[in-house]
Image (cartoon, rainbow, N blue to C red; front, top):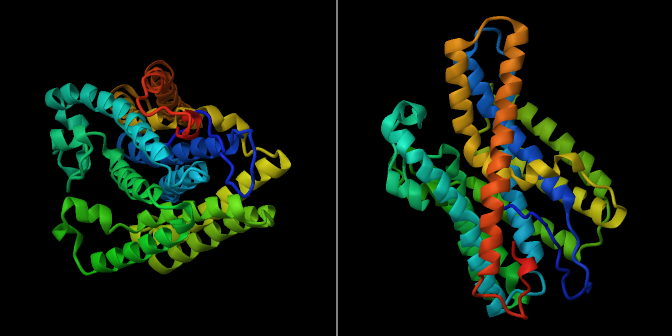
Length: 382
């Protein structure tokens, strides 16, 4: 979910020339909505473990894992959309590689490094799902492991980095070959997923767990949406919007009725969440570009800080839960205050990290970008 663009700008494909990049506020708002979904899933776990009263978020809350699928589809969409008109240019490929490294690693490594003393002194605060076991070096370098990283939600970054590598190779091809490259990656991904179905997860290695996971299809869906926006007729946006909402409602209801499980498995989540997310992204971008109708603009600030919020929110919830478990009092008003405070502190601390640490790091990286050339404007790779 690492992709965040403080100014998501569109570089229009050659077939639709324009000298004015457009900031896609709706994409940032959608990212803000996605990170709220993820926080609510983990807040539900915190509530169940430390609550002094009734459980309010309910068994339905796992639908919030759709936030991860939204992040991955957005990544596929934005990187592809920004690349049109520059694919096949060596200067752009170099700028892309530099931007991805400086975008993902500095703030991630910093937050991970700050958590290492916490883990060494109080390991019970970290990775309870796997017996508080963490490979510190793999976590710090963001290398896949069979156990969760020190920042547990960073498992999704393994998939992001995998996509960045694959897309980086695609950028080296002539632009006319990009659809073929996408189709090839789709076939390879489907084959890997099928192969993974024959290997029990406990027997899969760290890299196999990344390659065999069906959520990699979310990136391809996002790339497809970028093609539809850049080269398609841009019709039916409202139909796609309502169709996406209907799709996720029906698909999730069917999943629940068939399995009785509120948690959608990795093998099916792309169909339940990824496909409607693709339709939704297409709809909100077309409506913004062609009609000036922005999706929930008041959530854009959360989208700006979504990466930092995503990285830090789980630790915040663990600390808030432990404090509430020790000092909390029963009663609905107090319980509501705990939920609100946990959400508020997660957002506030994450946004503060974005504003005072992440954003300055990104500005410094752009100022010292060794790949900057006239052929590849820095504004297009964010």
